[in-house]
Structures are given as C-alpha cells and as structure tokens.
Length: 195
Image (cartoon, rainbow, N blue to C red):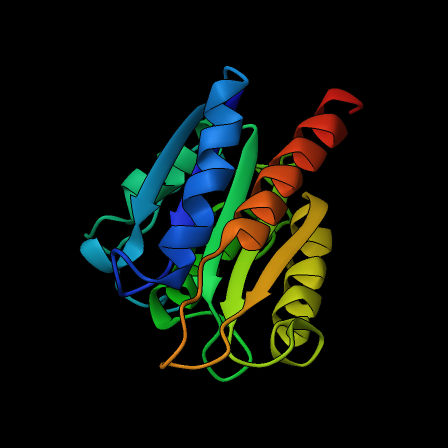
C-alpha cells in the first residue's frame, strides 16, 4: 500500500515529526510504502480561485507554477492520505491549508460550467495532530473541517490521532504517545484491509 503523509509542521524535529515517526515505523514494518512531503520545504502558493484547473478533468491543471504538482501526483498515487500537522488557532498550519485549498479545486472538477468527477474519489484519509490544549478542545474543529472536506471530496475519512503537549518546559514525546501512534497505524491498516 502506498501512503502519502503531508507533514505541515515548520519544525523538522518538532512534536508532529516525533509523533509521525513511530506511526511510519509501524506502517513500514508491515510492508507499506510511506512518502513524506514536508510542506514547509516546498514552494506552495495560495489558490486564486481562477478555475483554470476545471478546464481538463484528467489532470491537476493548476495555472500556478510551484511545487503543488508534486503534491498532487503523490496524493493521486496513494491509497491513504495522512495529514500531519500541529494545530495553530484551532486549525492546521498555513501550508497545509494552502494545499487543501488547491487540492479541493484541482482534485474535484465540480467548479466549471458543468460538474465533473472527483479524481481522488474513494481514497482514504486520516489525521495526525499535535496541540497545546486537550484534543477535544484543541483539534476538534480541525477534525470537523476535514470530515466535511472528505465528504465533499468523496474521500473515506478513517479518523484522527491527536496528542497534547503540556507546555514548552515539558518533553512532548514519550512511550505512551509512541504506542498510541503505532496503534493508530494498526487501526488504519485494519480499516483499509476491510475496505
């Protein structure tokens, strides 16, 4: 299985990366291929809602020249899309939001003169999130937004793992969080096997 992980943290060795490591290890140990795209390392411009992407229903078709085609190709090739992000102001980071805006247009050919297909219809999606509040108060709006996004895009939403950081003077990652990440990977693999 091909898994695309969009990593939306500005810190290469931060909390989100730490939570993602045992998750990836578990998936790869089961024989799955994981591709991680670090969004802060890419040139990603915001969507202009120009609808150039709606002209051809077989390609991404964005008029903007940046690294978004790489993201599109990786997402289109995967079986499971994982959005890994710290929570900023109750939602994802700016490059993750940029990517989601561009994908909702480029993947969903709904916005032209006639309604077209969702190029990623039936793909599965899941979330890894880190936040400074209890997840039910820190990551709940993010999950709610992505549930709606998946429904609109005809994606299969599989769930979220959100872990809390208790503050800058504390260590984030521990054995319990690593176990949660591995268990979440197991749960996703089980759900995908039952598809």
